[in-house]
Amino acid sequence: MSVSRPRRRSLVTLGFFAAFAVAAFAALWLLDYFVIDAGHRSSAGSAGPFAQLFDFDPETMQNALGSLSQVIAAVLGIAITVVSIVVQLAATRYTSRVADMFFRDRINLGVMGFFVVACLEALWVSLTVRKDFVPQATITATVIMASGSLLGLVPYFAYVFDFLDPEKVIARIGAETLERATSPKKTRSGAETAADRQSHALGGLANLADIAVNALGQKDKVIATDASAALRRLLVGYQQRKGALDADWFAIGAALRADPDFVALAADSLDDLASRRTWLEWKGLRQLREVFGAALTTMPEMAHVVAIDTRYVGEAALAASDREVLMLTVKFMNTYLRAALNARDVRTAYNVLNQYRQLAESLLVTRNAWPQAVLVEIAGHFKYYARLAHGIGLAFVTETAAYDMCALCEMANEYDAACHDRLLGVFLEIDREPETQAEEMALRGVRKAQAKLASYYLLHDQPARARRIHDDMASESPDRLRSIRDEMLAITSKDFWEVVDRGTNFDYLPDDRKEKLRVFFATFASLATSAPAPAAE
Image (cartoon, rainbow, N blue to C red; front, side):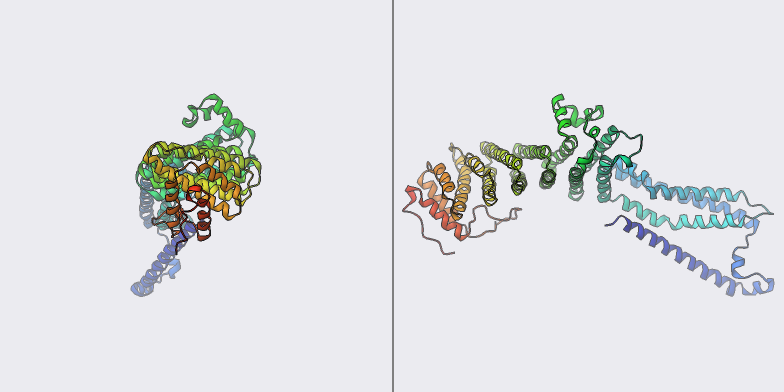
């Protein structure tokens, strides 16, 4: 929603109240003048209704203006009380920066200033009325200002509540932080240094993370999602403006070194952040990592949202050809996987792998050499965490990583990527010889993923690559190969029977791929005569 929309609504409300008040007063005044007081008016020979309205009597004005100043002071007191309570509650729940933002807002300052001026005006004008002098213009202006104070109270409260809406507060913090961090030199104040802008950026990132963590503690998914998205938008927008920033912005001075997220880093690591120009991305991703950690223990589904936002940052870095930031994103994806495995949270690991794979797939779209080198490195991480999950008994995570590697190999083939054969080599290294029944079940999923990839190669007339998979599986027992084949051929539905983001069953193959799967397993001598006839589906 546009920022000006609530303001227009407030102005319309104010206009409606003012028009209604004027109409009501005019109707009652004319009723008194022409009907109720008509006899007294004709005998006294009084002036017309408009002149009678502005015929200020000194004694009457002295009494009325004293009461008027009290009314405006009461309005000011009500406004200050309500606003201070609401702002304090918002600052306590979300971030202390709310109060600072509120009192820097021009509309808030303008309305409060108007209330104060109207109160002072009423006080001063009450002291200027004499028996021989009635300042009619000043009194009229004071009455109008007092009326404006009363009329503006309701729309102003509506504006305050709209201003403190959590979604708008979060978006405002993110936008202000990005704008100040990347503002051109000609728009900055002369006294503002790079250190000042860095401190402001650190505060903005920390405040957004605090809002997200506090919201997670209160099980408020909407606000936590908004805060995570604001961090992501800030980091993505920063990638687009980063190239125009001065060199002093990337220097890590005393203020940055004292920040909690930097103080524990070794001096060499800090120097690397400065030379790679990635200190702000490091800080921002550390805040997302903090949100991810809080989500693991309070609201695991939010961990998936953080992984999505992190992927967007990596894709923005790829679009900006910033390899250092992309590698930083990869590190944090690895950190998410490690945290999920340490917590033995299979669902979160499954979701993180899904986003990690999508980030890897985006590297295949480009034709540059360095993204494909990064892709091979990511494949090595997939293998590492698949084996790690296998070692701690999280069989489904190992299987998920294998199917993601299968998808990457298929996509690499479609794009004719130079790294394709290296990806296939990493994929074939995921499985090890099983030592227990549980490990055998885990590696069984890996073999299914490899057989699925072999059917793809045969379908696309690439027998040599399918042969590499055959040679890797040649030591498997005939019974195990036969059961793997039969289980995969038995899957007839593409849709998984639970609600999942990926949407499809890992083992599903269309009919043409199933036919190639039969051909693949027939290449094993022990199964050459036992391939089942195609099932009627």
